Figure 1 (cartoon, rainbow, N blue to C red):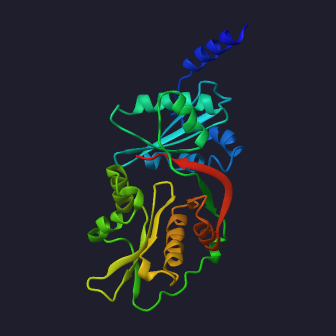
Figure 2 (figure 1 turned 30 degrees about the vertical axis):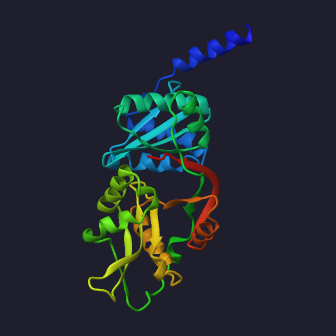
Figure 3 (figure 1 turned 45 degrees about the vertical axis):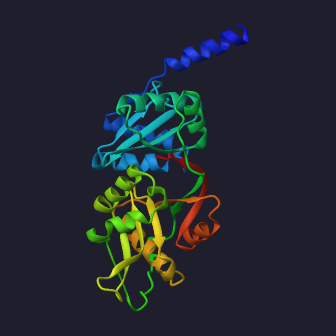
Amino acid sequence: MNKVNEIKQKRLQMEKLTAIEVVDDSKREELKGFLYKHLPDTIEIIRGLKLAKELNAKVFTDDSWPDVKTVIYTYNEGEITIIYPFGTDNSKTAVILKSVIDSLLENAQQPMITGSEDVFQELKKLGMDQKFTVPTFRYVYTQDNTKINRPALPEGYTIDSIHSSDVEYVVSKWNLAKNSLKFKQLIRHFIAHHPNAAIYDTSTEPPRPVSWSLSSGLGIHFHLFTDEEHRRKGLAFMVITEMTQKILAKGITPVCYVYIDNIKGQKFFEFSGYTNTGSLVVHQKF
């Protein structure tokens, strides 16, 4: 078989790849054998399987059961579909991911995909030019839960969940949301439905939030922020410690993503009990 025919044959084989939805609980459980072999790149999917009923999630694989090579996990955060793909063959994973996107979403909709940069590059070859962020390191909380010790707040501050009256202010402070209606919707949903924490400055009336963090349904930290004038007081550490406790209370291990060029952020999370797994992920831009 010459090179041209080989390419045509491979293309035909790729076109035949389809996503198979896994709805049976026992089969979903079987997937963990494959997923655990590829930690930490599969940590979100493993956790998602545990929370699948709570999040009304959908799980897809390639059609080579039981020796699957691709697993795709999807669930909704409000009106936004979140997708975590993983596979050992990026080109095949991209084809299966595209079929999942085509079957789940209308043309006007756009999912939020978190995965390897290689998969995004393969999607581009399939005509899906998805914009994605700078790569981030995946950090996982690894400290002994019994050793969590949040220091006392400085005078003039109190810690609470984000008040409903402050939601739009919090949304306005996330750079990714400034030019994205979907990211704004996502932040509002996180605040309304998942653990969050904020430190309030009580010297103003009413008190206003000056440091905060949010989380997703999978216990992933989002939007850690402290106002410039309130920095260098340890507020971010107190917020992340509070958030870590809240996520652990749900029976899941907290995860966060830190940009590879954010050395200060990396050191902060390491100080806060998180370990850099060394694996890289990128996130789709809306």
